Length: 142
Image 1 (cartoon, helix red, strand yellow):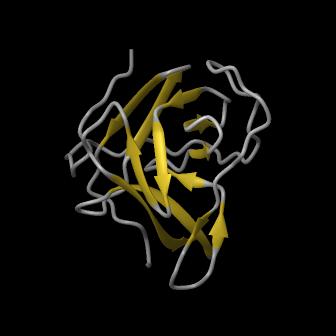
Image 2 (image 1 turned 180 degrees about the vertical axis):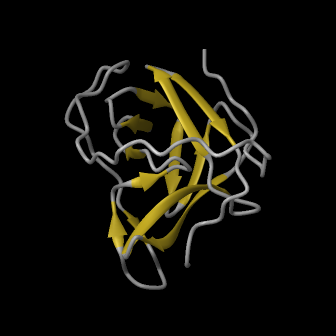
């Protein structure tokens, strides 16, 4: 069963940043074939990326063929629909969006709540187990 916390500007203390990783391990939790990663495009600059960062700068990907969010450890959570940079999850009534910013001199995509635009913290606890919590952080230097 998936855990979900509303993502809207909580006052939670920031979590420490883990080291960044770009390696995505084989999927767990779904009958997976080859991944069909979704590329997100910054309309303002043309920048494209497969990597979507959360509030702790962990990277997730979205697999179009499986309709899944996939953690760097390879755990997949199904029920995701991606339309352009808009994200919706069948287990949540909260709309999400990929927004862009520049951090440490590089362009990045961030997982945000659609309304206020704040970056969300994602916790993939295992296959089909996802927690989403809010922060007050906006994507840096849009």
